[in-house]
Length: 414
Image 1 (cartoon, rainbow, N blue to C red):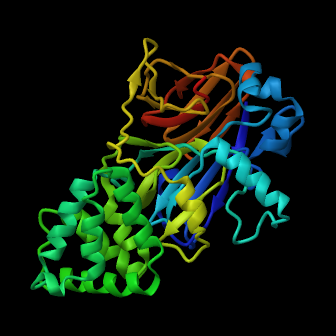
Image 2 (cartoon, rainbow, N blue to C red; image 1 turned 45 degrees about the vertical axis):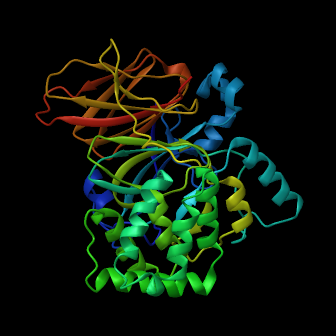
């Protein structure tokens, strides 16, 4: 077992307090958006090697003996790399509206941009690697997000409600009426695509009419019964005035997760995290196609090629309880699953769910990891990488500790 040092990403949307408070360490004074726990080559964790008291980037350690560290089944399925990436994510402001490609799209797009000689760090690059990025988020605090298209009829009712804030049809913004008409199409997916494309390509006209919509909502238009959706439009416009993502938000499911709830996001799902602290897990990739709420590059043709325009139910992910009392969140992706491990003082050990390699991070109290080949104690904020060859591992409460412990572990879903 290898204790880890992890990389903290200071994106501007990050909270200045949430991650430090969760992990029990001093605040840095700057935004702390994501703590990366894994072996992605852009920001690999650093492993402490107990045999010789050296350190190694985790990606280099894994590649030194893939079958030992990952297991033969994982290497066969995903190649000689850790297939997942775990993060602690803390959003104080909305993230960009975004979508992730399928595996086939990622491979084709990465090869295409490499063939064109595009610099790996170019701001107009879409594909940073050749992998897809299905993901899930487990809420540690109340967590707000936009996630996938809602049924067109529901969005149409919201837009008609907004239109009612204007004195008459002749004063209703033309864009608003066009969106209402788009969503009346017999083919729901085609209607959603038309509405989305109208907004993402509308330029200054969209910016101007977005301002009219927000002004109408602020000047006496009732937000009820769509308080969350219309309140989101107003708050997004304060941060990104006139951005197409402001009205695109109305096409998407607006979700509020309670602590302990989780959702999963497959390829093609348009989403944006708005606010909250959570454990995020994904396939090990940094491929993001943005669609608004950002000053960064937006490649509209590639975005439209990637999005799944079918409406979806909220992709909630319920916990499963195994016969060994393991609490697991298992999305329909092979690359990862999440285990929540809660231990009270004096409670018995919980077996670590492990299929191949695993990572563990402790967010409260202390735990003791025990295997036939070694052991490791981790206190709040500590994390570890566990090789496939180390299994089986049990997670214990630390003897004599009066504080409950809470940890999260990630392994593959094989």
